[in-house]
Image (cartoon, rainbow, N blue to C red; front, side, top):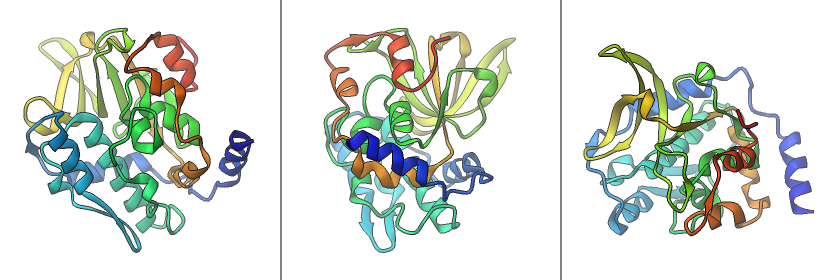
Length: 251
């Protein structure tokens, strides 16, 4: 019943202006982010992320400079929150879209809550986008645009043994005769900033394009825990299942 209600709410919440270019807002927020600050996946780094976000009228208060050192999923989530706030200020989302405590990056196991889904192994961001109807997920490089959120898999392993990177896609470039992928995230060792890697090193990629940010309001109606994402720290799964769980047809 809860999933049926959630689907109905999403279908009814078409208040977002579909002509809005949320990718442009994502890129604008990148320009406002700090640079560097160091990369770490320690308890202190997560506490710094948590300390950088608070709820107060009229919405989230975000102090990006506090979230240092940083790590990739924390960096992209902070950017996602900043995009929600900016979209609301521009009248592209209903008042209160960015004011929920559900959005706070409090310590949560993988698959639990909004942050626990975003921070999970596998297709965490894409799974959240699919579950709430925040936007479309896809794998075709030719469809990608700067400002798309992107999960890079360095191998085809998904779950317990995976190696991946949560980033924002910035485009493609040619260097030394080869094709490179440009992206923004918190990268080793420096922290916040841009980086490019040979496309040949990317084993798989799932793009997530923000189209309906106001649907984040329906997070309270979704199940507290996503069992699939919650299982990935201790279990292995396939890339095809990751795509299926993200609403993407396997290539």
